[in-house]
Image (cartoon, rainbow, N blue to C red; front, top):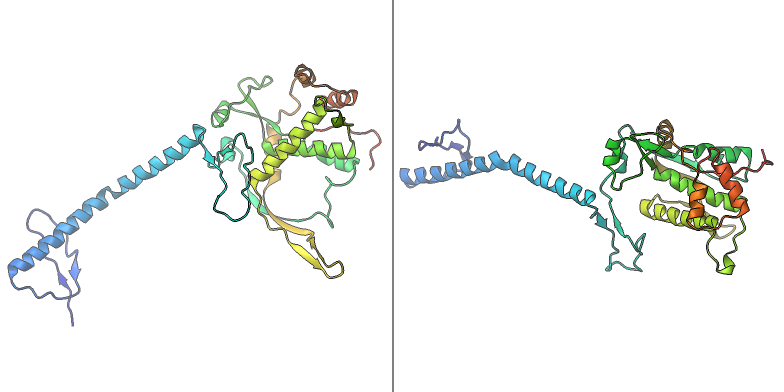
Length: 322
């Protein structure tokens, strides 16, 4: 049966603790000199290994710091990461979200900009058919009220420290000296969705067939469509939508019940309400006119109501349904 044989301690300047290396087999040494040579080789290898292990943490720290600096350098220098289609993939290549600027910064978590915004996520069970929300349906006190409350916040004031973490600079808050103005993108998207809702239920006449210049309302709606498109493609929600099969109609139909993994929007809304500057904007009707847009009488009425405090909404009809 093979025995374990300890390697003798080195007697040539390299001190070892007690036995550090053992041999499973019993080599047949021809003489003491060969055994001494074998022992020195083992100890020499063990010493080199120790030196490597001694500097290994410093090497790993250096590599990690270099990687982090390169990542944050790419973010702050605006290099970002370019999203390109895979030419080798089957099927047509998807176009970039914005053909003019197709560079995206996907590493920086923008929630880290704000000092006291702590986001949580959870699952949302949603049935928009059997359990409709207050935001649905024809204009009424209930639906309009839900939209008005939702969009009563959105513009927020941030500190200089938070502003310094942003990729792009923003204007100073003229009503809160020392602060900066910004808007959470989710409220910009909701505002745009609200504008499309208004055009559906309270349409403004659009004379786009005459090939004349865009009115302000046409420009606004076109911007909103584009902003929502970019937001949807940027987030790229891949939540699977399920279907049901109908033998009667011999067709698929989208299941009413869907499950989503969502940020807790109540937390977002509450945080934005504490920093709310919505409605603080100066009279921007004149600014729109100075840009050369034609403003119809209907649009002027909407703007006047808009400036009374509802930063995002549109005037409510006096004869709303309850």
